[in-house]
Every structure is written in structure tokens, then in C-alpha cells.
Image 1 (cartoon, rainbow, N blue to C red):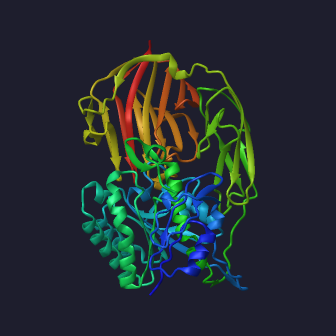
Image 2: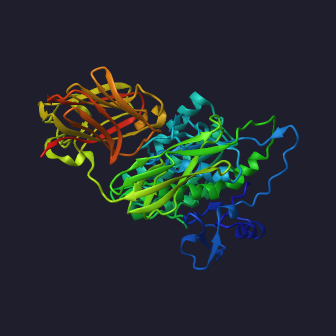
Image 3: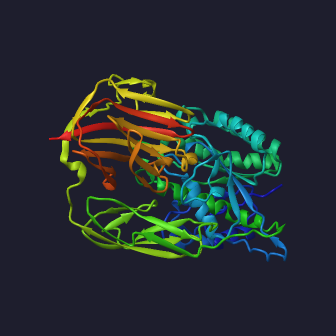
Length: 559
């Protein structure tokens, strides 16, 4: 009988338990998120399913302390075996609202631990900061536990079972529809039976749900005993992973919004920490099942930021471009940081967002090699933006009804107040029911988001806003913006892809002078002959494989 050992979060205690306890369940407790150090309790329960979230005594802890496996020396002519990890679940695994979900943070943590691994699966989210071999997954939003069996079967039929570890998280959508624990766990048993019938030596980690919804609590309470029983009955490697210990997600802090329970960036990082604590030692152990040959990698030699100095008003934004050399470096992942985020913060896409007048430095650091570059940012007083001269609203899309539109109006989702296409290979168009008298001074704005990183380099997958002779085209998952007049390009802007985030894209037309903006950032300007525009507005999707969402389209003229 394989033993499942409780891991309570720190290496010293793990060693103590290994020496003194012979238990039948491995429960991996989670650890509270922190950018530097986090705390974990020292008290030990003799119960193999101890509740680590309410322990009183604290001690300092770091990710490195989780590693207690002693790696073997690699024999000459051999290398570490690459461990293939299949992340398996619903939208909590996909990463709704954030690109790559917890996989991005888990990738960073395992990479820093020296693990040799990759994520596998039939789907891919191409986040600019996540190398391709770490972007795959087997997860689909909305799926319930009974549907997971078909997902798994379809995957192995088309791709084989070339994986080592499964990270499974299901049950969220079952709880939402009111299924009983008995019903959900019955489906989970069928899923595990299916996995082990296909691959006898599979290693499966089963996680509880982040308890950001009250209806998850009962299912979470039943899951550890289910894992214990299944492992004892089948002698298979099934491990329970606790998502609600000291890595517990806080709804108000770690979810996308008060109305959306999907984890945001901080929530995904906490989930990744729980997975990391659970699997890091097993991954390192599997790495030491050496294979012949070498694994060629190309190290990062330098990074740079363009521009290296920026002056911006407190109500503007600025996107920083960067370069990692050599171009064929194996791991080109970078991290952004502001030396004074109270003056200006920077997000993980390199977009600078001022907070107050002053100076700060934006620091770019490569994950591999720790190479750095800096950009000095000076924030000045507020200034008038090009869009602010246009206050008179002359058209509002009002997606709460289809009355304002003609064409493919089935794409208008009145319940969510959006125009949306999802995972279709087709072109759809909606056109305003009436012409809009814009004159020769106007601003057209669209709030738009695209998910599905498959199209991060694809110009043929786009959304277009059409008015008069003009066409604003957003492609490459938000990474390319181009304005056309007829068939002539008036200008374009390229950045890395920006999936899963809503931005306001605006075209300001001022008697022939044109400014194209994303949020409060001017992307490019152009000039053409002055003309008066009176036309309908059309919104066009040309989708290959993504989810394209528009919250509104508005037209303003000068007051």
C-alpha cells in the first residue's frame, strides 16, 4: 500500500512527520501568500487531516523551505527526465480573467526550484510571459465533474497519455447546480477509475475548491476522506491538496470582483503556491529518473526597456516595450516592479499607471539569470487628454437590448450587457440600426476584451470597429491596433498580446487630425483630409478560436 503523507507546509515539520507518522493520506496544506516571506504554524496534529488554517503558533517560511528532497548527482551522458504535468479542470484552472491562471505562477515557482517539467494538454493560452511548453492545459470553463470523463477520454484518444502528473480541480460547477456530495464524489470516482484504467502509474493530485463561495464548504469537507478511501482501496497515487489552509483565498482581495468568484492574479498565485507545496518534491524525485542525452538551453544575456526614460501626466498610461537577448533564449520570462508604486505602479504586461506626481524607477528582471534593466518615470500634473474635448453622447450601443442593431444580433447577450462571440470559427457583424451624425469632430470608443491566447500572433483573428470610411482593427489578442481609411493604413501600434483584460479603444477625429488611444495612452496619430462623417457604426468579429467581448460602443461629439 502506497502511503500518503500529510505535508503541513514547512520542511522541518515534514521531516518530523515522515519520521514519526505512518499515515494513509497526504494532505498538502496551503501557505499564505507574500512577496517575501510568509508564515506557517508550528503546531502539529496527530490527525492526518489536520486543519492548518487555525493554528496559533507562527514561524517564518519561504518557498525554498518546502524542498526537502535531496537531488542525486546526474551521471555523465545523462540528464534529468522532464516531468509532464496535465492541469485539469474548469474555469478556475483555465484562468478566467487572468492569462494562464495559476499555471503562470506555478511555472515560476517550479522553475526557481530547479525542476525540469512542462505543462501538457490540448489547449494553449499564449501569454507573452509564459513559454510555449508551459502554456498547455486540459480545462474548459463551465464543466462539471461528470463531464470531466469525456474531456479526459477525448484528450488521450487524440494525444495519448504522455503525462506523469495530473492536477485535478473539479466540483465548482456541480456545487452551483446544487448536486449532493454523494453525487459529485460518485462522478469523481468514475473519473479516477477512468484515469487509472488508461494509465496505471498515473499520479493524481485532487484539490479542494478555493472557498470563495459558501456552497463549496460541504464538498470541500468531504473530499479528503474520499481521497483517503480511494487511495486505500486501489493502492494508487491519489493525493489531496488543501486550497484553504494558510494559502486561503480571500474573496474581497483575491477574486476578480465582488460579483465574480474567479481568482484574480493574487488568487491564482495563492492557488499556485498550494499546488507547488504539494508537488515540488515529487517532481524533483521524478526528475532524478535520469534519461540519456543532454537538454540544450540558451541563457539570457541581457534585457532592455524602451524607452529608458518617460515623462507622463498623472492621468495618462504608458506601455513599456522590452527586449530579451539573445532572441532565441530558452526562458524569456520577465518580471516588472516599481521602486515606488505610490508614484506609479506597473502591471505584469509592462503598462505604467501613475498614482501621484513624483519620480519612480520601473525595474525589469529576467526570470532566468536575473538580468535587469530600468526605466526612469517622471509623473507630472494632470493634463487634458484628447478624448476629454468630446462630451456630447450621440450614440450608445446599449447591449441590454437588440433594438439598436441589425445583422447578427444573436451575438448580443442582453443579460450580460455584452456583444460576444465564443470559440467559433466565423465572421459576425452587427450594425447600428440608424446612421449617426458625427460631424467633423468626434470620438468613437469601444470597450473590448479578448481571451484565448491561441491567436496571440494571428492577424486574421480580429475585432473591427467600422464608421464612415474608417476601420479600427484590433488583432493578435490586443497586441496589434491598426486604423484604415478604405484600404489605406493610417497607422498602427504593436505590443505583446493583452488577452483577458478590458481596455477602452478610442479614435479621436478632429477635422482630419486623428489620435488613436488605448485607455489613457496615445498609441499613434495620423492626418487626413477633413470630412464630415454621417454613417452607421459596425462591429465585426473575425474569430478563429477565442472569446471576444465588447461591453459598449459610444460616439461623442464636441459639446
